[in-house]
Length: 329
Ligand SMILES: Nc1ncnc2c1ncn2[C@@H]1O[C@H](COP(=O)(O)OP(=O)(O)OP(=O)(O)O)[C@@H](O)[C@H]1O
Image (cartoon, rainbow, N blue to C red; front, side, top):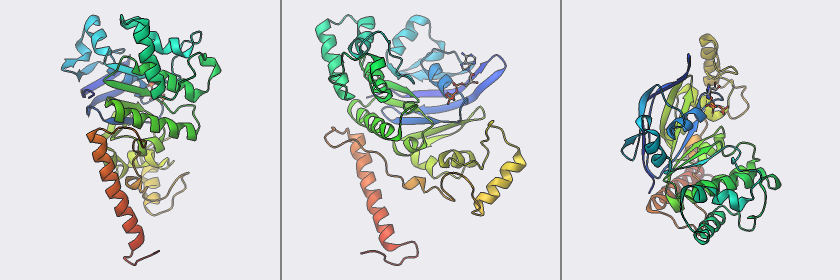
């Protein structure tokens, strides 16, 4: 079972540039959380701060009873062992084949025998669907395979927490769908705490238990997926609907009067944005469940039961129709 991460009052700046301030949230143990936010809002900085690669100005990050922000290098090293990180490009060594790339953390951080290493590497390669690609070099495989190899490498030390830095970047929608399914399947199997930084709204709608949104140096919201997907908060609605109208602009900042006018237009149904109109219906998006055949923890059993109930309700609503009249059938 993964561990909880409790962040309180976290602030980070570089020189005079405040990246975000007073961020407080709890990533529940074993759950999947997604952090959204426009480019440059400091999502990657947030991940690096969690693993202790960057020091915040203020605040605390409590993991397994220890405040990461106050640890000395040796203790930090111990806490980092709890983490697996999937970097954007997989961060593989170009000159090593996939087997050696994935074995690297085991050879570097443990005293396991080569036969034990082989067992673990092949097990993780199997989990991410890469069996048979052991001898491939990173340059010889697709972006999606590189991500999966990076994921296998993040798994070899059996982490309690996995951080995903834009796992979908550079992948086509079909590969993103496969990767999302893999993330859900892995969570069902290993029950670690997952934090995914992404821009991909479709993934954010289907995959996590919780969603957070960083904007203008603040954590605008963090909470259960349904709460964010049905939120009326203008920044959250704009981001989740991929609209131009709203507080988020090209250069992030918009004139308050313009935002007010755009939101008024939107409420009046006069929407010019690229996706969707009034009301996203986001709360009704079904949640991605583990693939058939993947053993489900009690947590996932409960999620699946709730999803089935929701689906029955949705079908009922479609059959009855919005005005109460029975349709179809
Ligand atoms: N080591 C650093 N020194 C100084 N500034 C930095 C450093 N790392 C990041 N920044 C700045 O912090 C800000 C946030 O960067 P970050 O990469 O975390 O954003 P992001 O939300 O992950 O963006 P994207 O979605 O485009 O990847 C940027 O302005 C960046 O230039």
